[in-house]
Structures are given as C-alpha cells and as structure tokens.
Image (cartoon, rainbow, N blue to C red):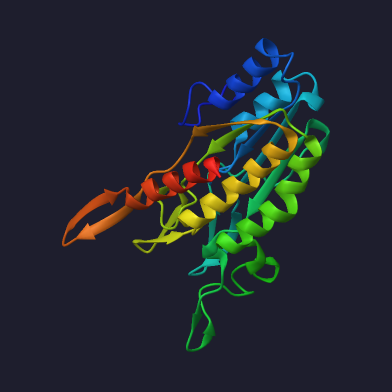
Length: 250
C-alpha cells in the first residue's frame, strides 16, 4: 500500500503477476481477474489495481473478507473494535473493484437464560442490521454464488489469479477476536468449503478458456492447549490447503 507498511508483504505477488501477464503475454492475455479469499480485505491489491492499471477493462479485483468496524457500550464505557485493516466495505465499480464484506460470527447475539445477553439493541447499534445470511460458511457460499460468480463471469477473464488465504478457516488465529481471555472465531470455513469455492472459480475459468494461478496468502493454524502448554496446530490449515488444491484439479 502506498507509503504505508501494514505488516504483511513487501511485494504484492498477485499484482506483479497480473502486470506481468498483461505486458509480457499480451497476445494471449488481455483481461486479468484477481480473486482474494483471504479473511482480511485485500487493501494493498485494491490500491495497486486502482493506481497502476490504466485500463479498468483489463483488470478485475474481488475481495471477500470479514468486515467489522463498530463502537458499542461495554460496562458503561464506549468500546471501539476494528477488524484489520478496517477497509473493504464499499466497491468501486468504475475501477472494476468488487468488495464483499462478510459479517463476523462474533456479531451474532449471544443468548442466555434471560434471552439476548452481551449484544443487545441498547449496547450494540448494529444489532438490528446483522444478518445470519451474511455470516459463516453459509453466508460465504451465498456471497460467492450471488455476487462473486456473476461478476467474474461477466468480466470473462483470460487468467484468474487467486489470492488463496486460509485464515477464514474455523478457529484460525487470523480470524479470531479475543474477548475476556478467550478467542471468538469470525469465520468457520471447513475443507469442503474451500474445495467448493475453488470449483466455482475453476468452472468459470473453464467456461472462459482461462488459466488459473493460485498464490498462498494467509493461514496460520489454531491454538491448542495441553495442560498449561499452548501451541499452534496446523492440521486444519493443511487440510484446507489440500482441499483447495483438490478443487483446482476437478
């Protein structure tokens, strides 16, 4: 991102790949689509697409990610929270940028014997606007089917570059929020969700005669505890990656 270090990558691999494809292979590739499925908004890629690609008709960028930027009352005090990087709420159709924000699972009202507890209309201004249709794996699939797929089909790419982030996996460190010493997972994708999503993208590529390149982005594993020892297990991360790769072969 221009003049700002966000703590992730120095070089944006998919943006460089898109530029290379358009300049070095221009006879075969005139339209490049970048699909970012990392749990965080692809803010750096979006900025590069807007600033460095002169012809919007040659580039399409879609990012499906968690979005949460709220303020609410907690124990009588105002508490603000922003899921990193706090951007990606709006699209820019003029620049062929499609942002698909997903509501985190921690926004779902928690219920107790007395009814709705921690989140209520008096403490959370977003309570009335939250929708389970836009949460979790079911919400993710719904947005892929109803928003991403039609837009990608309409663009008719010659190549699709996937920013394949696996931090949308259930309980992955990358999609967790810490509350009262415990983690709350914002997404809950399983291997079958990654395979399904990959197949949707791959099917569009086949229909357009497009190439597909997948580039690893986020994905960290989840915390496990044995007694007092805390470690990071990467079994679920590995399973999600394998499911994605399998989806590319179908």
